[in-house]
Amino acid sequence: MDISRPSCSLLILLALYILQLAGCMNAKINFREKEKQILDQILGPGRYDARIRPSGINGTGPAIVNINLFVRSITTISDIKMEYSVQLTFREQWLDERLKFNNLGGRLKYLTLTEANRVWMPDLFFSNEKEGHFHNIIMPNVYIRIFPNGNVLYSIRISLTLSCPMNLKLYPLDKQTCSLRMASYGWTTDDLVFLWKEGDPVQVVKNLHLPRFTLEKFLTDYCNSKTNTGEYSCLKVDLLFKREFSYYLIQIYIPCCMLVIVSWVSFWLDQGAVPARVSLGVTTLLTMATQSSGINASLPPVSYTKAIDVWTGVCLTFVFGALLEFALVNYASRSDMHRENMKKSRREMEAAASLDAASDLLDTDSNTTFAMMRQCEIHMSPPRKNCCRLWMSKFPTRSKRIDVISRITFPLVFALFNLAYWSTYLFRDEDEEK
Image (cartoon, rainbow, N blue to C red):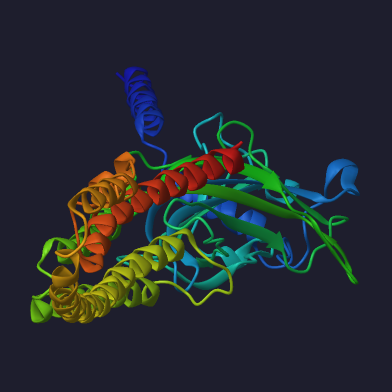
């Protein structure tokens, strides 16, 4: 009995040890606690200085920062202010070997930070920015990921209002190129170089809808700048926008055509309807002038002539010409009345003179009188008329002729103007695109 008691105690202790060891093996490792320990280890006091840039290639070259963008939305493109607003997710990625850590056999893919001031950050800025802000609803939309090999990924959501100088010579048949420029503020290319990330450096959200534009394409390029203090790395994205013409066709071009055609109605009104023709001409002229001023109010005051200026200017000229045509018709009508009165008085005088001459002709020889009358008939035979004169002879008064000629001339000239206008600006647009 004395020998068996120590043996039982030993077996019990061995069993308890095995159970405790199995419990430790089955316990889950708290990797979040491990992340804290690793962050404290690599970013602790005296271990990492965020003021010092990471070493480049071979420890002496510039730090390489890869950039890529995701365009989330483009809200407005202003012609007056020559700017556009964009919301994007901006990402930077670089290698900082001081941030290497043990990934615990692949169980820690990366470490996450929300405080950008704890690590070194590139001093990138948007050179054509007018306004900008970060998004802090509900939490700041920013994160930093540190990978085991020392790679750092910085991602943030920002909204920007950027300047976009526009050439409006072809407005509204134009295409505009708006740029997004990113450059280093203080580090020269000897210390910092920005590169586009390989493989789709710029992505655009699907089904991007703009009110009056269509995003045709975008191009990435480099735009390094040299100043007195050195050369600075720069990246740019060129966004090519095409203006939607259907809006302007409905709101501007068709109404202007209708106003011009309405002004031609006065050619078909009687020349004596002075109030109707004057009110029609003045109304269309004022409406066309209001239309032109409304169009110019939505555009910046530029020194060159735009395509819409040519259109509205010519339409205004046609409407004004229709009003002047009535003034000419009214003058010709009064001139016709004066000429008719003169002819009437002349006929009366000739009739009186013919009565006096008739008595003298009765005393002359009848044969001689017949021969003279025959000769007069031969010499007074009417000359042949061409088609135009024959057609114009149907309208005895000059005022009526002016109206008839205007009915044909005004539409014909306006049609020729349309042919020249659309062929010129549409072909010029294609040439500039090529």
